[in-house]
Each structure stands twice: as structure tokens, then as C-alpha cells.
Amino acid sequence: MISVKTLTKKYGSFTAVNDISFEVEKGEIVGFLGPNGAGKSTTMKILTSFLPPTSGSANVAGFDVFRQSIEARKRLGYLPENTPLYTDMKVGEYLRFRAKLKGVPGSKVRERVGDVLELCQIKDREKQLIGALSKGYRQRVGLADALVHDPDLLILDEPTIGLDPNQIRTVRELIRNLAQKRTVLISTHILPEVEIMCSRVIVIHQGKIRATDTAENLLKNHRSIGELRFEAKAGDGAAGALSRVAGVKDVSAEADGEWTNFTLRLDANAQPGAEIMKLAAERNWPVRELHQKRATLEDVFAELTMNEA
Ligand SMILES: Nc1ncnc2c1ncn2[C@@H]1O[C@H](COP(=O)(O)OP(=O)(O)O)[C@@H](O)[C@H]1O
Ligand SMILES: [Mg+2]
Image (cartoon, rainbow, N blue to C red; front, side, top):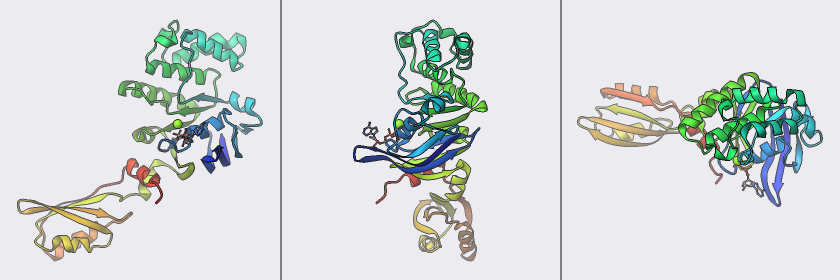
């Protein structure tokens, strides 16, 4: 549905998107993740024909977004990062105007607008001025706009930014609902959102793709970032012995009565739990807890988007 090949975008001498390639298959919901300034919006603007690439190519539904932009745009709906809505138009009026602009046949406009008003749960706002709506409602009008010509592909640039937690939940449910019949590329930095909604993630940082995988695989491959907690009745020298176990970076210890609570920082992918249990058995340390923290998507994201030294 989307095919991006060696795409580069420069603003003057600054390279915002640097030779990226990726694919999005029909029916996928792909999270496009990256810190501020990573190049997400730039990529999305190219995919939606708002910006020309400096080099490389991008196709949507088989159409080149630069040379066949009208055909490509017919098949995609775009929610830009700052939804530019006409604040002095009424919701229904605006959506009918947009539908005509996007080539929905005159006889179908009312029906399509009725459908998206319903889909985005804004039917009761049809006659209100857009300028009088809350940010959450405006975002739903933006989504209705993106959907009005019934595209197969949705490109959503940070659709929940600036919304309060209740609005976020509503918009998220709405998107999940829309995604059942469509392909979706969604940029966000709300990581739980990605785990809930996306079948796959593309991580971009400083204009380069850092990872493309399912959230599950990213987590599996970064299993043991973080630390291990170990609580035992262990005497002097225990911290030293623990720090010599393979994969342990450093050890801190805190006394808790007769018990000592150790926190071990680990090397990437280290699994020292079994070795530590063996050590405890050899030295007759009673153990009350051994727990290795699993990496969260946030840990993985931090590792992938850390600035290069
Ligand atoms: N019109 C522009 N002119 C110059 N630099 C820009 C322009 N738009 C974006 N940039 C820069 O390109 C980089 C990527 O921006 P953007 O694609 O908006 O990132 P993201 O959406 O991931 O936050 C940023 O460093 C940004 O400052
Ligand atoms: Mg952006």
C-alpha cells in the first residue's frame, strides 16, 4: 500500500529525511515512532504529496506520489499535525465542501458526509461552527475530513497530540475502529498507544530508520535492558561476588534488617538469574526475591533513539 525507496528530503543544506526505505502492506496498522524532529511529519508530507522529495521515490497504492499525485491522493486520507480547519464554517458545510474538493460525485456528497459524521460521532455537531468546538471535536472533524472520500489508506500525524486523556481515549477508539477496514500509518510518541493499536512499528531518528518490527519482537530482542532485583540474607563480600557474575554491570546494595536488597544493572541481553541462584546456593544465602525487569517499549525506544556519541 505504501512503498518508500531511498527517500531523502533536504531543507536547504539540512537533511531531514536521510535515505529511508520501508513498506506498509494492505491492512496493516503501522506506528511511525520517533522523537521530535526525527522526520516523521516530513515523510508524511511527502507521502501525501504536500512536499516533493529531494531524491528517492514513494508510491501509494502503486502510484508515484510526485508524478501521479492526483491518483495517489484519491486513495489516501491525511490528518496533518496541525489540522487546518476553517473555523468560520459549520461542520457539515465544511465536510461537504471538502468532499466536493476531493472529487466525491455531487450525488454522493450528502451520503458520504452523513456516513463520516456518524463514524466520527459528530452528527450532533453538524450545524456548529468549527471555531466553537473543543480540540477533541476538531480532531474528529479532521478525521472525518480525512475519511470523506472513503480512502483505503489513512495517514495520521500525531492524532492525539494536545488532547486530554478522555479525548485521547475517544480518538484512539475511533482510529482502531477505522483501521478495521483500512491501512493506517500513524505517527505518535505515545508508546502504549503503539502497543495497543499497531501491528508493526517503524522507528525513525535523525532522518534514519532505526528499526522496523513488531512491538513484540522489539521487546524480545531487548529483553533485559534495565535491571535485576535480588533480595537475600548475604554477608560481606556478596556485592563483590554478584558484580563478578557475567552480564552484571554494577551492583548497589541496601540493608533491610537481616536482608539485603541488591539492584544489579545489566548488560544488554544478559540473563544472569540462573548464575546468581547457583551462587546463592553455594554460599547458603537464603533468597526471598529474584526478579529481572523486562524492557518496556519505552526502554527500547530510548535505546534506539539515543543520540550518537
Ligand atoms: N520547512 C522546514 N524548513 C527547514 N527545516 C525544517 C522544515 N520542516 C521541518 N524541518 C526540520 O526537519 C527536521 C524534521 O522535522 P519533522 O519532519 O517535522 O519531524 P517530526 O515530525 O518527526 O517531529 C526537524 O529538525 C525540523 O526542524
Ligand atoms: Mg511532526
